[in-house]
Amino acid sequence: MRRYNPYTLPPWLRKCRAVARQFVIPFCIFQGIRTLFLPTTFDVLLLAVLIALACALIFEWI
View 1: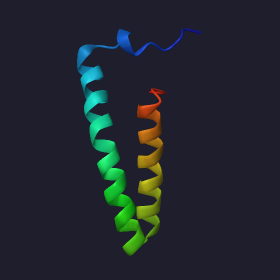
View 2: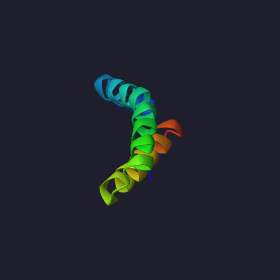
View 3: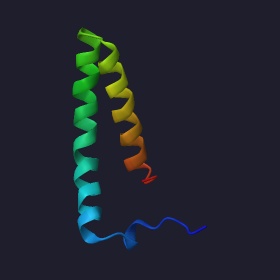
């Protein structure tokens, strides 16, 4: 099994990851505030997905 190396990715994909990494935390904060005031099942699931995506981008799992 090959080891994951983000520097072997194409430049456009690295740029997409960098942009997503910048925007995912503010989206998580906004969604968290929205979920506190108007909790629906969709909001809770979306917040969970955004938190998982933020963790994956920050810890460089993807």
